[in-house]
Amino acid sequence: MGQWVWDSNGDSQGFMVRGPLSGEEIWETFGHLFPLDSPIRWWPSFDGPPQTLYWRDVKEVTLDPQAQIELPANPEAGGPLIYVVHRLLSDNGCPWDRQQTSQSLLPYLLDESYEAAEALVADDLDSFQAELGDVLLQVVFHSALLSDAHLDQVVSREVNKLIRRHPHVFSDAHADNAEAVKDQWEKIKAEERHADAAATWVYPSLVMAKRQGKQGHIPQSDAFQSVLDFIQVYIANNPGTLENILADAAWAIAEVGRQHHLDVEWALWRRIASLNRPSELG
Image 1 (cartoon, helix red, strand yellow):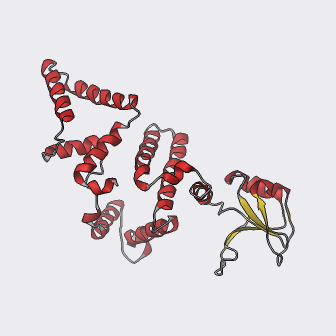
Image 2 (tube, one colour; image 1 turned 120 degrees about the vertical axis):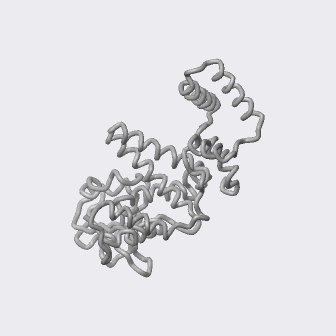
Image 3 (cartoon, helix red, strand yellow; image 1 turned 135 degrees about the vertical axis):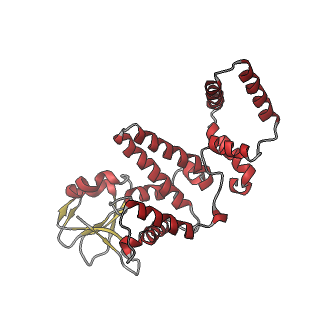
């Protein structure tokens, strides 16, 4: 039902549903996908001017054979989500969403990825599906905030990358097994990589803190030294329980963060980032 219509003059560019159809049939198929106050255009006749309706009213419309309706957005795949995010970021959208930047949303991108991983490890596929939706929202939201690109450019770059990295599928190269594919992928990826664009600290914060310590990079602050001294004294007085002591100490710090409405993982991550690439913190 319906088809995507593109007109180079911009007069009609959207997902069109043509008659004969009842509004109830349209609603049954697409009704759950868009906000009720979404504006839509309805052409009662093929050559007549369009009328503006709201999505909530579509059930009252009857499409004759020459009539058509333009839906608020493409109902397939991520179209409805893209439309809703666009509404949230519009002039009459959500004040909180409109204040966000890619930097301010970065903790949510990480959190949603962790939550999707948690659901998958737990073999909770229903929750995993829901968490994938949250990850997808982050992709759409970040794409909408980019000043020089939107989701179509993001998708285009990813499609070109997949084609480029699968020459055994899209060109004349050969890869007889999964290991050969992996080797070929890594070789092509290495040729594409720009080392100066990589953030070397983008790891879970405790992993990166360990790496920084191996390189002799530690905070020069009274807070760091005081906590370090306290834990070392505690360990010295409680031999044989090092793993539990360190785990409980990390847990205690996380609990203090919770009491003060602060994500300690994110706080440590930003602290490490400030020592490596302070310009990225904005």
